[in-house]
Image 1 (cartoon, helix red, strand yellow):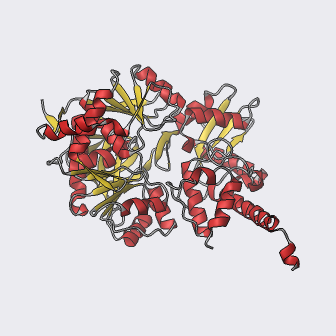
Image 2: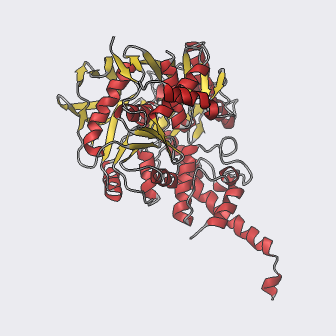
Image 3: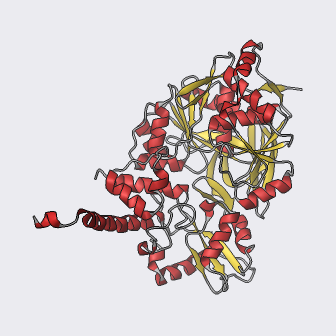
Length: 459
Length: 100
């Protein structure tokens, strides 16, 4: 059976990570992985919520070495955690947050677990990097689905490795050698998991434990890293860097994903930071499959081996690292065997600040609240974008007996707060047509009328 | 001399109130919040309960105060919990740190 190494760094003294300004080598990483693996409980499913990216990588590797499967859900609301427990009753949560409120058996990540004996053992043992069977189930990544239950997608170790090695091959000509990789995205979501954890391990780069948030944090975190520096980020963070006119230390490559990057923003980022900016296209279901240099081209080039094909009304991806043919939720136009243009998302899907959901899923949760008779989310095309370029959703609700604040509190238990409606408007009835559908233009008219009645609600 | 006689705290409290109102307006506008600026309870938490802002909002607020007052927010600032405790605390921080 084919196998892939945990990481490709060849020597024990190769740098695998940077944390608080200090370098961590492959020997120390492997020692931390083995020490943690000994502490893991017997459950076979792990919800790895470590916020520190180094700890996340150690926890993921320890789980992998112990034959455990990592769970990556789209949110960590109480409702999602309940579904995870139904999906995998033996699941436990590995966290570095002492105040974690996740309702699963908790294992707290401790930094100081390795002792002198572990160090001595690690120094004495002959150097070898663990090999993991390609077919081993490494993770379930979940999408929010159209009903309450998140939908699981299987990821074997072999397919994950293949995907990020294809990514590394595409980045390499731009990246000028081994890179220190800083991410503004969490490792718990597919893009961050692939590009800020697996990519450094499988390309010989080094991950950075930090997850900078404000523009000034990004500058400070980059300052701690040696060249070549790679920034894995999103349109929201890029826009905020530009809006804050933030100066950054020399960058060698910038990568953006999670939401469409406007070409003019891409050009501005390349100009200001004098580094190539590559935009990656992918989904939780397929992983990353294509990239483009957005400042200069509108066509995406597929990862080697991946193919797209229209069958009926949908476009399917297959080949390369993709396990089975997978429908693409976006509207694509194929230009050649390995190139396509992206024309937008299908109407039901929403993307707020890089987080994805579907109107069907959000509507399901709104209507599941006791006392809500009818309700619908919609995309506000009238609202102006904020400094960070984010436009929120709005929702209409028919719920004569409920306070709006109660509905919002209930929604907060069920959906990621980024999707909470702004505003949530009370109406007497939704303007459904004879088939029960809600034409988006009718919704907008209703909102316009509400706006006329209460202009301060609509800045 | 009569200016000296004015108690200093009262003046700064007036300034802070004006600043509080200005920041409330900037936040409501910048975040598209479905409330009027004067509806923000100056003592309610900005995060979680209270005004219920999320991390994207906090990023937006960072951009707003960077543009408007030249303030640079950092995630590793030990005072953050204090700063974001309420609109009043936030206004005090802005008053103390502003460079424009």
